[in-house]
Image (cartoon, rainbow, N blue to C red; front, side, top):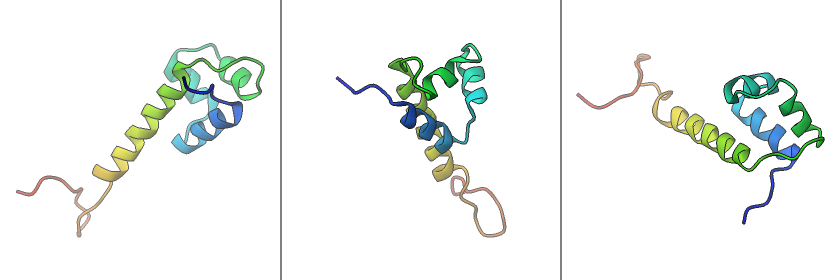
Length: 81
């Protein structure tokens, strides 16, 4: 069993992705006040939230690894032709 996400971990994960609470509630289809209640400890963070944020962090890492690297001359890296 995994440990529940803390408000501090929630806030840190949003920062690592570069999201504000507003970005999260819009993307996750939540009420506007929900992320704020989680971040302040007023409500428990559901188990799906760390999985969702973990997936977003994984996507961000993959993007940085495979999309952002540039070849000399400014072309985006891709398969060799």
